Length: 508
Image (tube, rainbow, N blue to C red; front, side, top):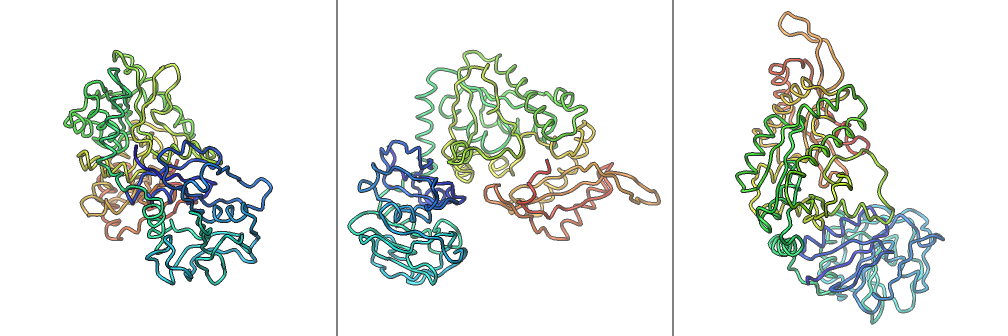
Protein backbone atom coordinates (compact mmCIF):
# COMPACT_ATOMS: atom_id res chain seq x y z
CA UNK A 1 0.00 0.00 0.00
CA UNK A 2 1.07 3.57 -0.67
CA UNK A 3 2.56 5.73 2.09
CA UNK A 4 0.29 8.44 3.43
CA UNK A 5 0.30 11.54 5.62
CA UNK A 6 -2.68 11.97 7.94
CA UNK A 7 -4.04 15.48 8.54
CA UNK A 8 -6.29 15.81 11.58
CA UNK A 9 -8.70 18.67 11.03
CA UNK A 10 -9.76 21.01 13.84
CA UNK A 11 -11.91 23.17 11.56
CA UNK A 12 -9.29 25.47 10.02
CA UNK A 13 -10.08 27.29 6.80
CA UNK A 14 -6.58 26.35 5.62
CA UNK A 15 -6.73 22.57 6.14
CA UNK A 16 -7.32 21.81 2.46
CA UNK A 17 -4.30 23.94 1.60
CA UNK A 18 -2.09 21.71 3.76
CA UNK A 19 -3.29 18.71 1.78
CA UNK A 20 -2.72 20.42 -1.54
CA UNK A 21 0.86 21.33 -0.62
CA UNK A 22 1.57 17.72 0.37
CA UNK A 23 -0.03 16.38 -2.81
CA UNK A 24 2.22 18.75 -4.82
CA UNK A 25 5.14 16.74 -3.42
CA UNK A 26 3.63 13.57 -4.99
CA UNK A 27 2.84 12.28 -1.52
CA UNK A 28 -0.60 10.92 -0.74
CA UNK A 29 -2.46 12.42 2.23
CA UNK A 30 -5.92 12.33 3.77
CA UNK A 31 -7.91 14.76 5.91
CA UNK A 32 -9.95 13.37 8.79
CA UNK A 33 -11.76 15.04 11.71
CA UNK A 34 -9.63 15.11 14.86
CA UNK A 35 -12.22 12.97 16.67
CA UNK A 36 -12.49 10.30 13.95
CA UNK A 37 -8.93 9.05 13.55
CA UNK A 38 -8.77 6.23 10.99
CA UNK A 39 -6.46 3.23 10.88
CA UNK A 40 -2.82 4.26 11.06
CA UNK A 41 -1.65 1.61 8.60
CA UNK A 42 0.92 3.08 6.19
CA UNK A 43 0.65 6.49 7.92
CA UNK A 44 4.17 7.94 7.92
CA UNK A 45 3.39 11.27 9.60
CA UNK A 46 0.54 13.17 11.29
CA UNK A 47 -0.23 16.88 11.02
CA UNK A 48 -2.56 18.72 13.42
CA UNK A 49 -4.34 21.59 11.67
CA UNK A 50 -5.27 25.05 12.87
CA UNK A 51 -8.68 25.87 14.28
CA UNK A 52 -11.03 28.80 14.96
CA UNK A 53 -11.22 27.44 18.54
CA UNK A 54 -8.97 28.23 21.47
CA UNK A 55 -7.33 25.56 23.61
CA UNK A 56 -8.45 27.63 26.57
CA UNK A 57 -12.15 26.99 25.85
CA UNK A 58 -14.01 24.48 27.96
CA UNK A 59 -15.26 22.75 24.82
CA UNK A 60 -11.97 23.00 22.93
CA UNK A 61 -11.28 20.16 20.47
CA UNK A 62 -9.15 17.58 22.29
CA UNK A 63 -7.85 14.67 20.21
CA UNK A 64 -6.79 11.27 21.54
CA UNK A 65 -3.30 10.72 20.12
CA UNK A 66 -2.31 7.67 22.14
CA UNK A 67 -1.49 5.71 19.00
CA UNK A 68 0.43 8.59 17.42
CA UNK A 69 2.67 10.20 20.04
CA UNK A 70 6.06 8.48 20.21
CA UNK A 71 5.02 6.23 17.34
CA UNK A 72 4.66 8.51 14.31
CA UNK A 73 6.31 11.90 13.53
CA UNK A 74 3.92 14.69 14.53
CA UNK A 75 3.65 18.33 13.42
CA UNK A 76 1.25 20.79 15.04
CA UNK A 77 0.27 23.90 13.05
CA UNK A 78 -1.16 26.93 14.90
CA UNK A 79 -3.94 25.43 17.07
CA UNK A 80 -2.21 22.06 16.73
CA UNK A 81 1.01 23.54 18.09
CA UNK A 82 -0.82 25.24 20.95
CA UNK A 83 -2.73 22.07 21.82
CA UNK A 84 0.52 20.09 22.12
CA UNK A 85 1.96 22.65 24.55
CA UNK A 86 -1.30 22.75 26.51
CA UNK A 87 -1.48 18.94 26.59
CA UNK A 88 2.05 18.63 28.02
CA UNK A 89 1.54 21.20 30.76
CA UNK A 90 2.71 24.45 29.16
CA UNK A 91 0.74 27.70 29.04
CA UNK A 92 -1.30 29.11 26.19
CA UNK A 93 -2.82 32.53 26.84
CA UNK A 94 -4.77 35.13 24.95
CA UNK A 95 -2.41 37.40 23.06
CA UNK A 96 -2.37 41.09 23.89
CA UNK A 97 -2.85 41.80 20.19
CA UNK A 98 -4.20 39.52 17.50
CA UNK A 99 -1.25 38.11 15.60
CA UNK A 100 -2.35 38.20 11.99
CA UNK A 101 -0.51 38.65 8.71
CA UNK A 102 3.10 38.59 7.59
CA UNK A 103 5.95 38.23 10.07
CA UNK A 104 9.69 37.50 9.98
CA UNK A 105 10.72 34.17 11.49
CA UNK A 106 14.14 34.40 13.13
CA UNK A 107 15.46 30.83 13.22
CA UNK A 108 17.53 29.96 16.27
CA UNK A 109 18.37 26.37 15.30
CA UNK A 110 18.87 25.90 11.57
CA UNK A 111 20.35 22.45 12.12
CA UNK A 112 16.93 21.07 13.07
CA UNK A 113 15.57 18.83 10.28
CA UNK A 114 12.25 20.72 10.15
CA UNK A 115 14.02 23.95 9.21
CA UNK A 116 16.83 22.54 7.10
CA UNK A 117 17.35 24.78 4.05
CA UNK A 118 15.03 27.52 5.34
CA UNK A 119 16.55 31.00 5.46
CA UNK A 120 17.71 32.32 8.83
CA UNK A 121 15.12 35.08 8.43
CA UNK A 122 12.04 33.87 6.56
CA UNK A 123 8.64 35.45 5.92
CA UNK A 124 5.74 33.53 7.49
CA UNK A 125 2.00 34.06 7.86
CA UNK A 126 0.39 34.34 11.30
CA UNK A 127 -3.30 33.94 12.09
CA UNK A 128 -4.09 33.39 15.77
CA UNK A 129 -5.47 35.15 18.84
CA UNK A 130 -3.73 32.96 21.45
CA UNK A 131 -0.02 32.48 21.93
CA UNK A 132 2.32 30.09 23.76
CA UNK A 133 3.69 31.90 26.81
CA UNK A 134 5.44 29.02 28.60
CA UNK A 135 6.71 25.72 27.24
CA UNK A 136 7.37 22.43 29.07
CA UNK A 137 11.01 21.78 30.00
CA UNK A 138 11.26 19.14 27.30
CA UNK A 139 10.67 21.74 24.57
CA UNK A 140 13.43 23.63 22.76
CA UNK A 141 12.85 26.83 20.80
CA UNK A 142 13.58 26.71 17.07
CA UNK A 143 12.49 30.18 16.01
CA UNK A 144 10.72 33.41 17.00
CA UNK A 145 9.13 36.47 15.46
CA UNK A 146 9.04 39.97 16.86
CA UNK A 147 5.74 39.26 18.65
CA UNK A 148 5.79 35.47 19.00
CA UNK A 149 8.58 33.98 21.09
CA UNK A 150 7.71 30.33 20.47
CA UNK A 151 6.92 30.52 16.77
CA UNK A 152 8.62 27.15 16.17
CA UNK A 153 9.65 24.47 18.65
CA UNK A 154 10.51 20.80 19.10
CA UNK A 155 10.22 18.30 21.93
CA UNK A 156 13.67 16.99 22.92
CA UNK A 157 14.33 13.36 21.90
CA UNK A 158 10.86 13.10 20.37
CA UNK A 159 9.61 13.44 16.82
CA UNK A 160 7.14 16.18 17.78
CA UNK A 161 7.26 19.67 16.27
CA UNK A 162 5.04 22.71 16.53
CA UNK A 163 4.77 25.99 14.59
CA UNK A 164 2.47 28.94 15.34
CA UNK A 165 2.36 30.09 11.71
CA UNK A 166 0.81 28.67 8.55
CA UNK A 167 3.39 27.22 6.14
CA UNK A 168 0.63 26.09 3.76
CA UNK A 169 -0.40 29.61 2.65
CA UNK A 170 1.24 31.48 -0.18
CA UNK A 171 2.47 34.29 2.10
CA UNK A 172 4.82 31.90 3.97
CA UNK A 173 7.51 32.12 1.32
CA UNK A 174 9.42 29.00 2.37
CA UNK A 175 6.45 27.13 3.77
CA UNK A 176 6.56 24.51 1.05
CA UNK A 177 10.17 23.72 1.98
CA UNK A 178 9.21 23.29 5.63
CA UNK A 179 6.35 20.96 4.71
CA UNK A 180 8.70 18.99 2.45
CA UNK A 181 11.17 18.67 5.32
CA UNK A 182 8.53 17.15 7.56
CA UNK A 183 6.77 14.97 5.01
CA UNK A 184 9.74 13.69 2.99
CA UNK A 185 12.81 13.95 5.22
CA UNK A 186 11.34 13.43 8.71
CA UNK A 187 8.35 11.20 8.01
CA UNK A 188 10.15 9.51 5.07
CA UNK A 189 6.96 9.33 2.99
CA UNK A 190 7.60 8.07 -0.55
CA UNK A 191 7.00 10.53 -3.42
CA UNK A 192 5.34 8.03 -5.72
CA UNK A 193 1.75 9.30 -5.86
CA UNK A 194 1.51 10.57 -9.45
CA UNK A 195 -1.32 10.80 -12.02
CA UNK A 196 -0.03 7.64 -13.72
CA UNK A 197 0.17 5.70 -10.47
CA UNK A 198 -3.33 6.89 -9.55
CA UNK A 199 -4.71 5.70 -12.88
CA UNK A 200 -3.04 2.30 -12.52
CA UNK A 201 -4.24 1.70 -8.96
CA UNK A 202 -7.75 3.08 -9.60
CA UNK A 203 -8.32 0.96 -12.71
CA UNK A 204 -7.26 -2.12 -10.76
CA UNK A 205 -9.53 -1.19 -7.85
CA UNK A 206 -12.53 -0.63 -10.16
CA UNK A 207 -12.08 -4.06 -11.75
CA UNK A 208 -11.84 -5.73 -8.36
CA UNK A 209 -14.93 -3.89 -7.08
CA UNK A 210 -17.27 -4.07 -10.06
CA UNK A 211 -16.30 -7.53 -11.38
CA UNK A 212 -18.78 -8.51 -14.13
CA UNK A 213 -21.62 -6.16 -13.13
CA UNK A 214 -22.70 -3.15 -15.17
CA UNK A 215 -22.25 0.51 -14.27
CA UNK A 216 -24.24 3.59 -15.27
CA UNK A 217 -22.82 7.12 -15.20
CA UNK A 218 -24.48 10.46 -15.83
CA UNK A 219 -22.22 12.63 -17.97
CA UNK A 220 -22.39 16.41 -17.73
CA UNK A 221 -19.79 17.47 -20.28
CA UNK A 222 -17.54 18.66 -17.45
CA UNK A 223 -14.07 17.44 -16.51
CA UNK A 224 -15.03 15.45 -13.38
CA UNK A 225 -17.65 13.15 -14.92
CA UNK A 226 -15.56 12.85 -18.10
CA UNK A 227 -12.41 11.71 -16.28
CA UNK A 228 -14.50 9.31 -14.19
CA UNK A 229 -15.98 7.90 -17.40
CA UNK A 230 -12.59 7.34 -19.04
CA UNK A 231 -11.19 5.62 -15.94
CA UNK A 232 -14.21 3.33 -15.76
CA UNK A 233 -14.04 2.65 -19.49
CA UNK A 234 -10.38 1.71 -19.21
CA UNK A 235 -11.22 -0.66 -16.36
CA UNK A 236 -14.45 -2.35 -17.51
CA UNK A 237 -15.07 -1.32 -21.13
CA UNK A 238 -18.58 -2.08 -22.37
CA UNK A 239 -19.82 -2.78 -18.86
CA UNK A 240 -20.11 1.01 -18.55
CA UNK A 241 -23.06 2.88 -20.01
CA UNK A 242 -22.96 6.68 -19.96
CA UNK A 243 -26.07 8.82 -20.19
CA UNK A 244 -25.81 12.40 -21.43
CA UNK A 245 -29.05 14.32 -20.99
CA UNK A 246 -29.90 17.39 -23.05
CA UNK A 247 -31.90 19.44 -20.58
CA UNK A 248 -32.31 22.30 -23.03
CA UNK A 249 -30.20 24.45 -20.75
CA UNK A 250 -26.77 23.69 -22.17
CA UNK A 251 -24.58 26.08 -24.15
CA UNK A 252 -25.16 26.53 -27.87
CA UNK A 253 -24.47 23.28 -29.78
CA UNK A 254 -22.95 21.75 -26.65
CA UNK A 255 -25.08 18.61 -26.65
CA UNK A 256 -24.09 17.49 -30.15
CA UNK A 257 -20.46 18.70 -29.90
CA UNK A 258 -19.73 16.99 -26.58
CA UNK A 259 -21.70 13.86 -27.49
CA UNK A 260 -19.62 13.45 -30.65
CA UNK A 261 -16.45 13.93 -28.64
CA UNK A 262 -17.49 11.28 -26.11
CA UNK A 263 -18.25 8.80 -28.88
CA UNK A 264 -14.89 9.47 -30.51
CA UNK A 265 -13.27 8.38 -27.23
CA UNK A 266 -14.91 4.98 -27.55
CA UNK A 267 -17.36 5.52 -24.70
CA UNK A 268 -20.67 3.68 -24.72
CA UNK A 269 -22.77 6.82 -24.38
CA UNK A 270 -26.46 7.43 -24.98
CA UNK A 271 -27.68 10.95 -25.66
CA UNK A 272 -31.17 11.76 -24.45
CA UNK A 273 -33.10 14.74 -25.81
CA UNK A 274 -35.31 15.82 -22.90
CA UNK A 275 -35.46 19.55 -23.58
CA UNK A 276 -39.22 19.85 -23.61
CA UNK A 277 -39.63 17.95 -20.33
CA UNK A 278 -37.35 20.46 -18.61
CA UNK A 279 -39.04 23.48 -20.19
CA UNK A 280 -42.42 22.15 -19.04
CA UNK A 281 -41.13 21.58 -15.48
CA UNK A 282 -39.87 25.17 -15.31
CA UNK A 283 -43.04 26.81 -16.57
CA UNK A 284 -44.29 29.47 -14.16
CA UNK A 285 -41.33 29.15 -11.73
CA UNK A 286 -39.34 32.24 -10.73
CA UNK A 287 -37.77 31.34 -7.37
CA UNK A 288 -34.16 30.11 -7.80
CA UNK A 289 -34.56 27.19 -5.40
CA UNK A 290 -37.81 26.11 -7.03
CA UNK A 291 -36.09 26.12 -10.42
CA UNK A 292 -33.14 24.09 -9.13
CA UNK A 293 -35.45 21.53 -7.55
CA UNK A 294 -37.55 21.24 -10.72
CA UNK A 295 -34.44 20.71 -12.84
CA UNK A 296 -33.07 18.17 -10.37
CA UNK A 297 -36.31 16.19 -10.17
CA UNK A 298 -36.72 16.11 -13.95
CA UNK A 299 -33.14 14.93 -14.33
CA UNK A 300 -33.73 12.12 -11.84
CA UNK A 301 -36.87 11.02 -13.67
CA UNK A 302 -35.11 11.00 -17.05
CA UNK A 303 -31.97 9.32 -15.72
CA UNK A 304 -33.93 6.63 -13.86
CA UNK A 305 -36.01 5.82 -16.94
CA UNK A 306 -32.91 5.40 -19.08
CA UNK A 307 -31.01 3.42 -16.43
CA UNK A 308 -33.83 0.89 -16.20
CA UNK A 309 -33.33 0.06 -19.88
CA UNK A 310 -29.83 -1.27 -19.15
CA UNK A 311 -29.56 -4.88 -18.02
CA UNK A 312 -27.63 -6.01 -14.96
CA UNK A 313 -26.90 -2.49 -13.73
CA UNK A 314 -25.71 -2.70 -10.15
CA UNK A 315 -23.52 0.38 -9.82
CA UNK A 316 -24.01 4.13 -10.11
CA UNK A 317 -20.77 5.97 -10.87
CA UNK A 318 -20.33 9.58 -9.75
CA UNK A 319 -17.72 12.24 -10.40
CA UNK A 320 -17.48 13.16 -6.70
CA UNK A 321 -14.14 14.81 -5.86
CA UNK A 322 -12.26 15.16 -2.58
CA UNK A 323 -13.53 18.61 -1.48
CA UNK A 324 -17.07 17.16 -1.58
CA UNK A 325 -15.97 14.32 0.71
CA UNK A 326 -14.15 16.65 3.09
CA UNK A 327 -17.20 18.89 3.32
CA UNK A 328 -19.46 15.95 4.17
CA UNK A 329 -17.26 14.77 7.06
CA UNK A 330 -16.21 18.22 8.28
CA UNK A 331 -15.46 18.53 11.95
CA UNK A 332 -18.10 21.25 12.00
CA UNK A 333 -20.62 19.25 9.96
CA UNK A 334 -21.94 20.22 6.54
CA UNK A 335 -22.02 23.90 5.75
CA UNK A 336 -25.26 25.80 5.67
CA UNK A 337 -26.98 25.39 2.35
CA UNK A 338 -26.37 28.35 0.08
CA UNK A 339 -28.06 26.64 -2.83
CA UNK A 340 -29.11 23.09 -3.59
CA UNK A 341 -27.05 21.18 -6.11
CA UNK A 342 -28.19 19.32 -9.18
CA UNK A 343 -26.15 16.21 -9.81
CA UNK A 344 -26.37 12.47 -9.97
CA UNK A 345 -25.64 12.29 -6.26
CA UNK A 346 -29.24 13.33 -5.67
CA UNK A 347 -30.65 10.11 -7.09
CA UNK A 348 -33.20 8.46 -4.81
CA UNK A 349 -32.79 5.27 -2.80
CA UNK A 350 -35.36 3.39 -4.87
CA UNK A 351 -32.84 2.94 -7.67
CA UNK A 352 -31.07 0.44 -5.35
CA UNK A 353 -27.66 0.97 -6.92
CA UNK A 354 -24.28 0.72 -5.23
CA UNK A 355 -22.08 3.80 -5.51
CA UNK A 356 -18.62 3.95 -7.06
CA UNK A 357 -16.63 7.21 -6.96
CA UNK A 358 -13.26 6.84 -8.70
CA UNK A 359 -12.23 10.48 -8.14
CA UNK A 360 -13.18 10.82 -4.48
CA UNK A 361 -9.56 11.27 -3.34
CA UNK A 362 -8.66 14.00 -5.86
CA UNK A 363 -8.73 17.78 -5.81
CA UNK A 364 -9.93 19.60 -8.94
CA UNK A 365 -6.44 20.37 -10.24
CA UNK A 366 -5.48 16.73 -9.69
CA UNK A 367 -8.51 15.61 -11.71
CA UNK A 368 -7.24 17.70 -14.61
CA UNK A 369 -3.75 16.19 -14.32
CA UNK A 370 -5.21 12.69 -14.35
CA UNK A 371 -7.40 13.66 -17.31
CA UNK A 372 -4.34 14.84 -19.20
CA UNK A 373 -2.50 11.59 -18.45
CA UNK A 374 -5.36 9.54 -20.00
CA UNK A 375 -5.62 11.85 -23.03
CA UNK A 376 -8.91 13.57 -22.28
CA UNK A 377 -9.47 16.07 -25.13
CA UNK A 378 -8.55 19.68 -24.40
CA UNK A 379 -12.10 20.84 -25.18
CA UNK A 380 -13.28 18.97 -22.07
CA UNK A 381 -10.10 19.01 -19.97
CA UNK A 382 -9.80 22.80 -19.86
CA UNK A 383 -13.53 23.54 -19.92
CA UNK A 384 -14.69 26.14 -17.42
CA UNK A 385 -16.92 24.88 -14.61
CA UNK A 386 -20.54 24.96 -15.69
CA UNK A 387 -23.46 24.60 -13.25
CA UNK A 388 -25.60 21.46 -13.37
CA UNK A 389 -28.81 23.49 -13.85
CA UNK A 390 -27.02 25.24 -16.71
CA UNK A 391 -28.57 28.35 -18.20
CA UNK A 392 -31.67 27.74 -16.08
CA UNK A 393 -29.98 29.61 -13.23
CA UNK A 394 -28.48 32.24 -15.52
CA UNK A 395 -31.94 33.39 -16.57
CA UNK A 396 -33.34 35.42 -13.72
CA UNK A 397 -37.06 34.84 -13.33
CA UNK A 398 -39.11 32.39 -15.38
CA UNK A 399 -37.29 30.23 -17.92
CA UNK A 400 -38.63 29.78 -21.44
CA UNK A 401 -37.22 28.23 -24.61
CA UNK A 402 -37.03 31.65 -26.25
CA UNK A 403 -35.05 33.11 -23.34
CA UNK A 404 -32.70 30.13 -23.44
CA UNK A 405 -32.07 30.68 -27.15
CA UNK A 406 -31.29 34.36 -26.57
CA UNK A 407 -28.88 33.58 -23.74
CA UNK A 408 -27.21 30.80 -25.72
CA UNK A 409 -26.37 33.29 -28.46
CA UNK A 410 -25.02 35.85 -25.97
CA UNK A 411 -22.99 33.21 -24.14
CA UNK A 412 -21.64 31.84 -27.43
CA UNK A 413 -20.33 35.25 -28.48
CA UNK A 414 -18.75 35.86 -25.05
CA UNK A 415 -17.05 32.45 -24.65
CA UNK A 416 -15.83 32.30 -28.25
CA UNK A 417 -14.51 35.84 -27.85
CA UNK A 418 -12.49 34.78 -24.79
CA UNK A 419 -11.05 31.85 -26.75
CA UNK A 420 -10.13 33.77 -29.91
CA UNK A 421 -8.60 36.59 -27.86
CA UNK A 422 -6.43 34.16 -25.88
CA UNK A 423 -8.16 35.06 -22.61
CA UNK A 424 -10.08 31.85 -21.95
CA UNK A 425 -7.34 30.06 -19.99
CA UNK A 426 -6.83 33.12 -17.77
CA UNK A 427 -10.41 32.83 -16.54
CA UNK A 428 -11.71 30.32 -13.98
CA UNK A 429 -15.34 30.61 -15.02
CA UNK A 430 -17.29 32.84 -17.37
CA UNK A 431 -20.83 33.19 -18.64
CA UNK A 432 -23.71 35.51 -19.31
CA UNK A 433 -26.84 36.25 -17.26
CA UNK A 434 -30.15 37.29 -18.80
CA UNK A 435 -31.65 39.98 -16.60
CA UNK A 436 -35.37 40.57 -16.07
CA UNK A 437 -34.74 44.21 -16.87
CA UNK A 438 -35.72 46.09 -20.00
CA UNK A 439 -34.20 49.40 -20.93
CA UNK A 440 -34.61 51.99 -23.63
CA UNK A 441 -32.18 51.92 -26.51
CA UNK A 442 -31.73 53.43 -29.95
CA UNK A 443 -30.87 51.34 -33.01
CA UNK A 444 -30.76 53.33 -36.20
CA UNK A 445 -33.62 55.76 -36.03
CA UNK A 446 -35.75 53.43 -33.94
CA UNK A 447 -36.41 53.37 -30.22
CA UNK A 448 -36.01 49.94 -28.63
CA UNK A 449 -37.18 48.57 -25.33
CA UNK A 450 -35.31 45.30 -24.83
CA UNK A 451 -33.47 43.19 -22.26
CA UNK A 452 -30.13 43.72 -20.59
CA UNK A 453 -27.50 41.03 -20.02
CA UNK A 454 -24.65 40.84 -17.53
CA UNK A 455 -21.32 39.26 -18.42
CA UNK A 456 -19.47 37.49 -15.61
CA UNK A 457 -15.83 36.33 -15.58
CA UNK A 458 -13.91 35.41 -12.44
CA UNK A 459 -10.53 34.12 -11.35
CA UNK A 460 -10.25 31.47 -8.65
CA UNK A 461 -8.35 28.34 -7.64
CA UNK A 462 -11.16 26.29 -6.17
CA UNK A 463 -14.39 28.25 -6.55
CA UNK A 464 -14.67 28.89 -2.80
CA UNK A 465 -13.50 32.47 -3.27
CA UNK A 466 -13.26 34.41 -6.52
CA UNK A 467 -12.33 37.80 -7.89
CA UNK A 468 -13.68 39.43 -11.02
CA UNK A 469 -11.43 39.32 -14.07
CA UNK A 470 -9.95 42.61 -15.24
CA UNK A 471 -10.68 41.93 -18.90
CA UNK A 472 -9.36 44.51 -21.38
CA UNK A 473 -11.74 47.39 -22.12
CA UNK A 474 -11.26 46.94 -25.86
CA UNK A 475 -12.30 43.31 -25.58
CA UNK A 476 -15.41 44.14 -23.54
CA UNK A 477 -16.36 46.90 -25.98
CA UNK A 478 -16.05 44.55 -28.94
CA UNK A 479 -18.07 41.79 -27.25
CA UNK A 480 -20.77 44.29 -26.25
CA UNK A 481 -21.06 45.51 -29.84
CA UNK A 482 -21.27 41.98 -31.19
CA UNK A 483 -24.00 40.99 -28.73
CA UNK A 484 -26.19 44.05 -29.34
CA UNK A 485 -25.80 43.85 -33.12
CA UNK A 486 -26.26 40.08 -33.49
CA UNK A 487 -28.69 39.03 -30.74
CA UNK A 488 -32.27 40.14 -31.21
CA UNK A 489 -33.87 41.18 -27.93
CA UNK A 490 -30.72 42.61 -26.27
CA UNK A 491 -29.86 46.31 -26.31
CA UNK A 492 -27.67 46.69 -23.22
CA UNK A 493 -24.60 44.81 -21.92
CA UNK A 494 -23.17 45.15 -18.42
CA UNK A 495 -20.09 43.61 -16.76
CA UNK A 496 -20.26 42.19 -13.21
CA UNK A 497 -17.31 43.42 -11.10
CA UNK A 498 -18.34 41.88 -7.77
CA UNK A 499 -16.15 39.32 -6.01
CA UNK A 500 -16.97 36.21 -3.98
CA UNK A 501 -17.65 36.84 -1.16
CA UNK A 502 -19.95 38.69 -0.84
CA UNK A 503 -21.44 37.80 -4.24
CA UNK A 504 -21.61 34.25 -5.55
CA UNK A 505 -20.11 33.31 -8.91
CA UNK A 506 -23.53 32.50 -10.32
CA UNK A 507 -26.42 34.94 -9.84
CA UNK A 508 -28.82 32.26 -8.63
